[in-house]
Length: 117
Length: 114
Image (tube, rainbow over all chains, first blue to last red; front, side, top):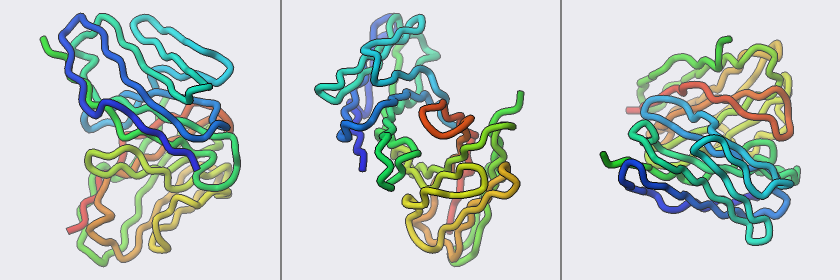
């Protein structure tokens, strides 16, 4: 099955600086990579996703890059603001239907992003 | 429109009791997923429904866990003879269909087993 590693577990940046969170995946058949933001007491919310036929995607201050050869993808947040403070999860979905949650997402363990004022 | 709703928001139970957790997906979403989030951990996939059938139950941690979905809508996750290690937040998500459609999450049910 798929295995997703996420780093760092905690990231503290000054307001206005950029933040980068990195994930690696194991299953070369994975082709969908969403990023979720989870605030305290709430469910995860999708903030951006990328599919394997694309190398980069941007949405205002947020961007995601994907390197299929190296099997890693990253979330980039520029001009960070206090409201960006949250736990961020990367995930991957494999198209190989071999059980093990093939139609469910495999998540990284999360990154606690802290924006220092 | 309404998002995914879950009930109860919090559940405290005693070890050995059975619990039922409910998920109401977004109207029209045929795919429904259950995940478990333990303290400080990522999300662990439990089970996936397409319509009323569950083609993938591989994530259920033991035979004490079961889930059903009726009418292609509401789903119930049942945990029998709860153990302290079952304490976690149980999250439900739905999507339009299988494949690479976006999954929308509910707020979760926080289960505490004493």
